[in-house]
Length: 96
Image (spheres, rainbow, N blue to C red):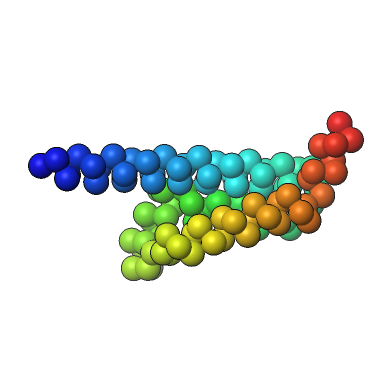
């Protein structure tokens, strides 16, 4: 019975972190969409669907395929590095 509580808490932690990271990617996508260019903004918005739990559950149910957690973490690191290194959004924010 004690193990079940630990599993539920870790699931809650993963779900919360998925929401936080998904909303962060969604925010970067919206900012890119309106301030930089529609193409990277649209790409970020589509990638946010990978992390948001309702969209992830829908795609898992619809296509019988779920993206593994390791792939999500690697994709998140690449998104983070791309956003900090290559994106024009940082330059626009510096000018404000």
